[in-house]
Length: 527
Image 1 (cartoon, rainbow, N blue to C red):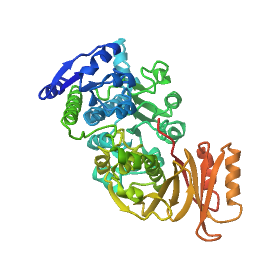
Image 2: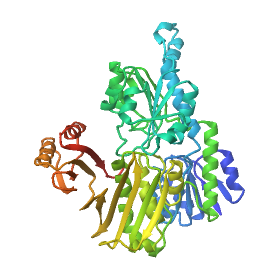
Image 3: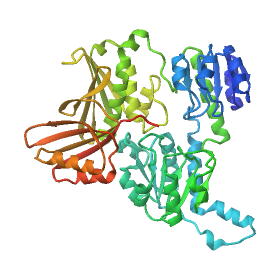
Image 4: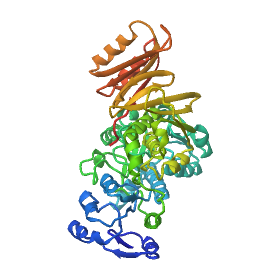
């Protein structure tokens, strides 16, 4: 078969491809030139510059696989590739050590003010007192996201004699302890950390994660690092905190807009800024090239790819039966992740009714996509869902039963987190997902992008007071469901909202005497 390498990759990756197939190295081609020659190729390999859009994919009438030599696949139209039956693979692990080492390089550079000191010497100055730095030994590092890169950073920080905290809802305390890390919640980490580094994907819930509210809770003089994705930190908020002196420094490798021509960080003090260099080591480039090449070979030889980023096509019969329930499965996973508030080790998916007659693997993959979306930069699909769950210490149990009660089909997700069992169930009615159960409460409600849930004592006036508080905050309620165990005992209220609830309003509702617990659930699509 013929493979087109449209951007430069390490020679080791090219050599691996050449062991089995004909390889053409054609970097620098224009889009029109690529469109003209793509019909001759079975595989295409790119990095980040070539935009593999729907038009380019349509031109590749022989393409079986597109390989992205790197992690992000923003430059590949995944929907178009999937519709065309083309597998898209990436290389998410080859840059793990490079990203971890660059994170620590930024940390050392900020702590010792290396760049500013270098510039001063080159100006002919000798101002030693002006560049007094910080020792990292004995300080506390907070890692948001204990995935592969987070774990690599933790190991190195421990060797530096730092105390390491981690925030990750899909890692148990025992798993974190195995890496020498103390698992804490986000608020606790902010209060204790001297340094915060983020290693999570950019999603709706992580955008602006390190913003004004979070920064205000950090110790004076703290350091913030971002070698993950631009947008996870609020650049304006970080710049303001650096100007005021509340933050002691920031090491930033990724920006919301690249190049960051208008970023306020460019003029903020005590910063060390690099142009998205996290994966830019000779070793990482070799590993990435070899990783993507091996997967392209697997697909061309009819084997499963380890890091496919789009799901393989289903048989027509399975697609017709399961397709309407895939959005529901993803919503249930996303809802479970937020409602359970903890790492789950065993997750049970019960597939009931007419769906039980079909392969449940796509449904399980969709559940895990929703569950893990804020915890991994990798796209979860049929090929990698099981491996990603296993890497997070999650065992997925799939059960099937023909009995769906009053429903034609029903999906139920359950698991134990924090000492309690969480259950979320749903079905599809009139082509739309419906939530039919939360824990022991039965209901019938369409999920909304933003939802507020309270567990409260069933007392007169409680629901009204919550409604008034939301109204005063200009938060509109689009739907409501009430359920209770017995009159004037335990009750559950689920509100579908048109707007997100401000944190101050959530806290005010939580502090109501009758309210025992409160959840703000965000189910909208990620960015």
